[in-house]
Length: 364
Image (tube, rainbow, N blue to C red; front, side, top):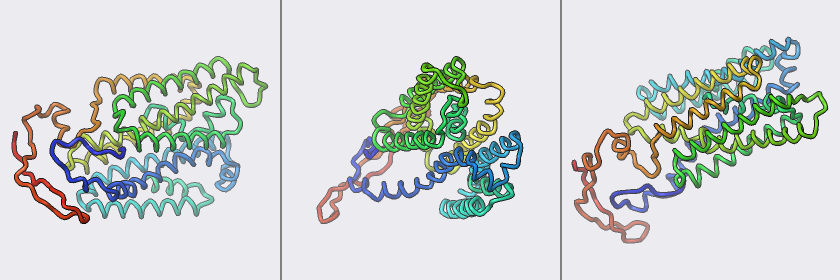
């Protein structure tokens, strides 16, 4: 989270902060690209005519196509929720390394099934489930972006879906590399929630007033409103990238001690995947029955999220794991443990004489 050092209350050798730390974190974190790839490609893939032909969707009724597309989108999240549940046990029983290897093998099997299948679509269901092994509306726009762009009268949905994905990626890389330890966690979360709520309220108002359709000739005001609606979606993606995109994972990893992370991590992941499944499964029916009301609902939930963040999310910027008990009120300042220097040693590090302090931990 930013190329900065933590605030230490005792001297730490500068060699602790080296490129290997960042390289290891980057390699481990690269596994999340699989999640990002899925949310980027599935929305447009299921709307392609070639996909419909290969998997027999072109012979189905409109209702059947909607059902299959809905299932293909949501079953990935269901697999992710179950996968996080099983990891809850395997991390302690099998260890971290074995769990990672097993997860990779299962994911590869699922990817092969998705790539090799053509018809029937049941094999694709299974592949999506294996590769998978938030009511803010982010999942709705991520997975159903072609539907969203069509609803505001856009025709080139593939292009704009790609632009939306690039904005999300760029926003995430810039913020979490350079700014997360400057602006913290709480304030960006609140700003992100309020900005996304404003974008969705605008989308609801535009659709309610203009009733944009692709087939009808649009007035100048409708076209202008559509451009603003497109901008609102892009702003939504940019503000989501530094808010709910990564902050939940950071906070859930920071606030628990190392001894509990094999439990807290899977629990957080299971919650994210479960609600993503609920949202992606429910969205098509919600669009059909509520129309622009979906945006009002999601925006209102974001307002609630900002209120929750204001009162209940603690700022963890610059704090170490051993300082979390004080932050959350489980220990008074000065009543915990502290490191006390016992001797000073001189070591030859990279050809230079450097002094390193040795510490013991005492109750204070």
